[in-house]
Length: 466
Image (cartoon, rainbow, N blue to C red; front, side, top):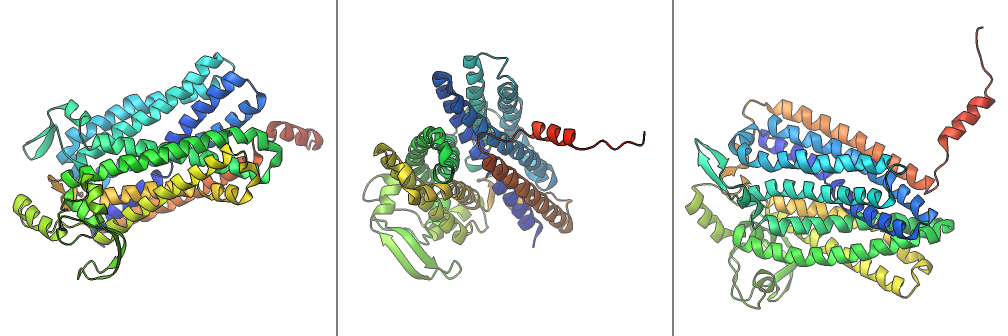
C-alpha cells in the first residue's frame, strides 16, 4: 500500500484490460480483409452476411479498445509525472506519430468501410479494410517503439537531468523493437484468428443451418492461427536470446536462476521455490535446454541473479535490482504453455479440415469454442513477464520505477482513482460481453428491429387527448 505500488497496480490493471481488445482488433481486421477479398471473388450473398456479422463484432471490440486506450494515456500525467518529465521528449514522439498517423488512418478507413458499401467499388471497399488492418499494425508498431525504449534505451542523451532524443532513426532500429514487434504482431494475428475460429465453431456445432456459411472462415481462421502460433514460438525464442544480452536479470528471474549455471544449463519446466530463502522444494528440468534456448548450442553459461545483482550494484550504484521472481517465473511458463496449446489446437484442426472430418467432431468443436481464451491468457502473461521482469526500472538503466511516480499525488488519490477506474472498466466489460453475445445469438441474419418497431407501432392504438 505505497503510492508506487498502487500506481503500478492501477496501470497494470488498466493495461491488462486494454490488452484484451488490442490483439483482437489487430488480428480480426486482417481476417476481415481476407474474408472480404474472398467475397470480392466469390460474390456469394452468404459470404457478405458472414462478413457483416464479424464486422459488427469488430466494431464493438474496436470501440471499447479505443476508450480504454485513451484512459491509459492520462495516467502518465496523473501518476507518472516524474517519468513523463524525464523521458517525455523521447517517449512522446512515437506516441504522437501513432495518434496522428496510424490511429487516424485506421479510424478514417473504418468509417469508409462501414458507410461505403454502396458508394465504393468492391475493389476499393476491400482496400479500405486492408488499410484498416495496416493501420492497426502501425499503431502497435509505434506504441512498441516507445515501449522498446523503456526496455532498451537508444538514441538519446541526458540534458539537464532529463532524456532528449538525438536520433529518431535509432528508435526505429532498436534491436528490442525488432524482436518485440513481430512477436506481438503474430500473437495478435493468432488472437483474431482464434476469435473467428471460436465463433465459427459455435455455429458449426449448434446452428447447423449455417454450417456451409461458417466453414470457410473456420478454415481460414485455423490456417492463420496455426501459422501465427508457430511463428510466435519461433520469434519468442529469438526474443529470449536477445534478453540474455540486453536484460540478463529478467532472463535469470524468469528461470528463478539464483546462481550462474555451469557450461550445460538445464531448463526448469516447473519449479516450486521460496523467493526469499531461495530454497527449491521441487524442480522438473530438461538438461541442456536452457543453453540451447540462450545460445542455440548444447553448452553455455547463463548468469544468475546473485552475480547480476553484484554486477548491477557496481554499474548503477547501491540498490536492489532483482524483479519479483515468482511472478516473472510463472508468467513466462504460463505464456509458453498456452502458446504451445494454441499451436496444438490449431494444427489439430487443420488436420481434421484436411481429412474433411472437422464438422463431424463435436468434441473438437467444443474445444475450439473455448480456445479463444488461449491467446488472451498468453498475451497477458507475456506482457506481465515483460513489464514485471524489468523492475525495479521504469526505463532500464536510466530511471527506477519509484523515481517516476508523481510527487504531489497522495496515496488516497491513487486509491480512489484505482477503485473508480476498476469499477468503470468492469461495467464496460459487462456491456461489451453482453453486446457480443447478443450479436452472436442473432447470427449473420439479425432481426429487422426497425421493421419490428414499425409493426408494433402500427398495431398499438394511438392515445391522444385530442
